Image (tube, rainbow, N blue to C red; front, side, top):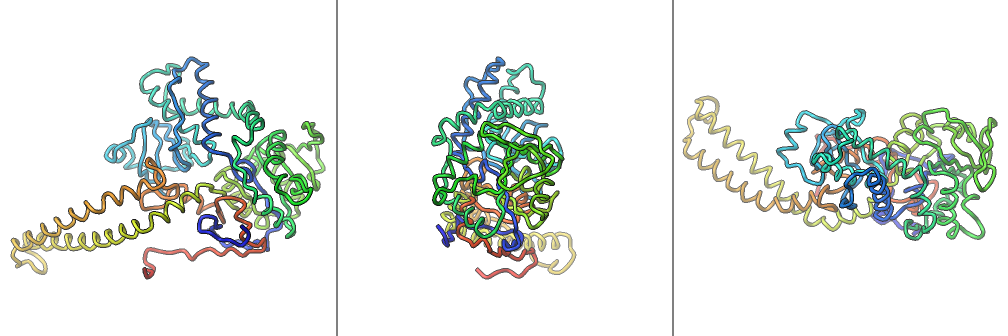
Length: 474
């Protein structure tokens, strides 16, 4: 795909980034360098947690995995709801359990509430790994409401128990052992990704692999997903200048973890105080070890990951590294938007008509108000004519709304009948889109999209627009 720029495989730029000035590129592994079949992986995780809860005596036998959850949703552990918010934190739609919350109910619950992710009440679903968690939580809320889970006191307790059980399933290793045993079932191979990194390496970039996965899993997955697609006899171990496993991000970027060198294939560890060396494989450590090894810091390092907070936000906010976010859903999202383009254009045209009619209706109501109040310009007009004019415009608006409603509903359900587009909440940007805009310098659907660009590319952001800027033609 070298040199090819499709709308679905582009790299999108929030802040200008000159790759010529980047000395090192760090990569996350899971859902970044290696993409999983989301439905297969998350369904498996769901079943593991369901089994664990069943062992506790919970009535979970009828619970089933639901694919309609998306990233960017927020769990409200105070009310037991799952909601979607816009960029300002205003909640636009929500579910309690598996049932949608009506507009009026949503307004009654949240009219004075703004989603603030700094508050412990809100749990942001920003990775694929959170989809099974949200799916399970929603169904368990209904069991909790029915008083079928006596050991849990409230929605927050329920969330913490689900979170802990899911974490245990990952830490325990059973999930990942099954992936290692049958990678074809779980991994969506992208044979172009290795070549994209080879380009970067030959362009003089230091390449780092920094993952929370353990050594055994990392070695197996990278060998499977990368080695068959590298040139000649090259292996993934030769591709990376440094490999760091069990990094414990985001703590890796904020703490002072001890650094151990992995000195054997079976994971034998040796403490090290000398720091990182070329071709070394390490466990733990922290960002200071990396920057000391590289001899550079901050904006000369680019980190690529899929996790808003664990990869991108913390490396940007704390270390001032440059950041790239992998958002795999972009390809499907852009495809849906492109197919909907004609309908969206018609919707925009009808909404422009509606704005004009609303202006006419407001003017008619104001004129009638002045006549009845006996003040201001036009106070001597015949109120009967004004009432007729007002009612006529109102009738036109009602008819126009009947044409708009199905188009607006289709737009709101685009890509996903429950939640709509990932990057939109109604007509506004979603809360996830705002996080991406704030913390990711660039974003794209997959690492292999770098193949369409030179490793010396100068990415330039679009000029920001303001509501009072002149309207663009068309």
